[in-house]
Image 1 (tube, rainbow, N blue to C red):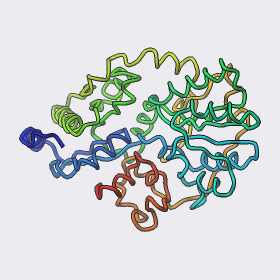
Image 2: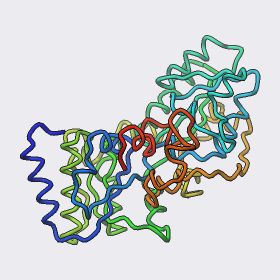
Image 3: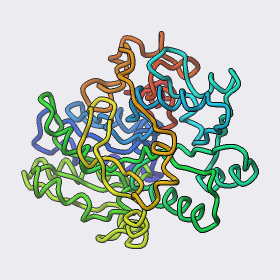
Length: 357
């Protein structure tokens, strides 16, 4: 927490003095979720202020039907699946099944730190097809795009990307259209904002009359952003404020936006808890189809099995992690039922590790 305890107390006192009833704020970033839990911010807030986690963890919003299709591909003898470490433990619609389990059964599954590492694996294994699971939001999209262009320019034909990349705006618009939506303001993700800029979140106050503050990731950032957000709500003047000005420009990062647009086009995509949302995913352009794993392997999605996991409700702010009956009993980090308990940015993992939420 901030070293100046008096400054923290003043912020909390200002929050408590605002003329607000019960107020629900949603952070839309897995890094915020973990930072809030680790620093104990929820316990410091006035009793009428509640922080809830939103669809900001890319692993958590990936639906089970997609994982089912990934597992099917992983069992093909000539395929090596590569992705970030968290994805290897995400359960499919069958309890206990995951890429980690399939690796134990003989599938070639590799954890990588970046898609460039996956290209290296492809170059070392020319007889295999190497598939990178491209998970993330606008933050990781430029790196995935750069890897595709690198593979194209280097003539690496046995590398492809399964794009699970998603964009934030369509998801937030879909969330706000749900019948039980009950959020009064958004803490916007600083990492995404470095790419799309302040302007990328202007739709919240402009179109949805929703207060919004872009926040950094230190406890001081988050507390300040929460206060700015509560003040907007109390004043009844929704706008976009940028607490993270040291990293986020109004226009974002034009070069990153350019490479995203060079490689990807928006598409209708599936989200856990929100279903199919128009223009919410990023698909490789037709001219890069040879690097599109879904096309290369003619991927088909099934409906998946019903699961008792309530991660979809958690990431939509309907419940807190501890309100799920599986939490801490049937569902633990060692034996997760849903992705929110797997991901290092998941709300359930944060609640379990820091005994919060």
